[in-house]
Length: 258
Image 1 (tube, one colour):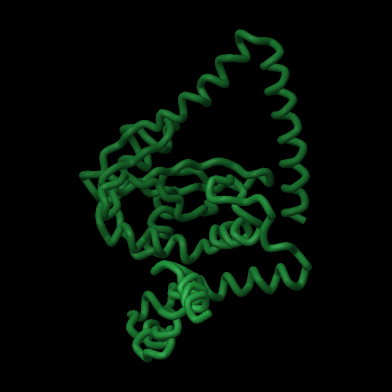
Image 2 (cartoon, helix red, strand yellow):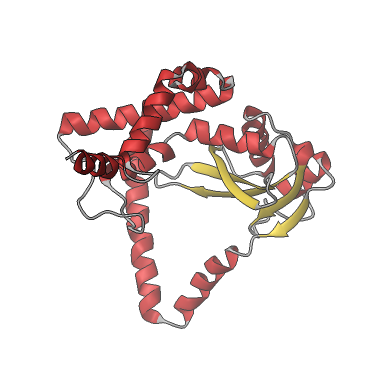
């Protein structure tokens, strides 16, 4: 009888990684004050505490959203190799991408006032307002080349001086200066690159090491311009899209002016 009970206890305890032994170790850790969550949290520096609070608050926000809407937290066939992990993690990932201020701040800290390259392009939105996208290319602490979008600036006109002022304002907002610029990448417009009065020359006056590199992605636009000359159907499609954009742009411009 006692022999059978001994085997039952041994089966219940199981190997070192059994549920029983794991629960036993967790209980010991809980009793020890230095193993508590509060003690581990107090050992962190202020930056780590802030990062953990951001993660915790974001997770709580998503949980509250799911509970209020009656959403399920995950599917029944999700695994590590699934492209769609589960509803909770997917929404949490989407939520994280919306932290634009924290993201840009992390990018600036990653640059750490080191050298970087400017990637700038300007265009009109659907309301015909001039805008300029600014990206930075830099080498991170691990030696990888990174491209990061840091801002979109509205400009009063497309002159080289206005573009330069907008770039300086965006960089100054993030505590960066033109003196650390080691490269410039633009399209082939005359106000962007050229020997007289272009933004390339204006920035080179501030930083002589800011060498210019032509944006090879601009070749795609040149291709789209050349293809309609060889294919009538494609040209008609481009014309139709252009007319639709003009109508929408005129509508939004009227609403904006009103």
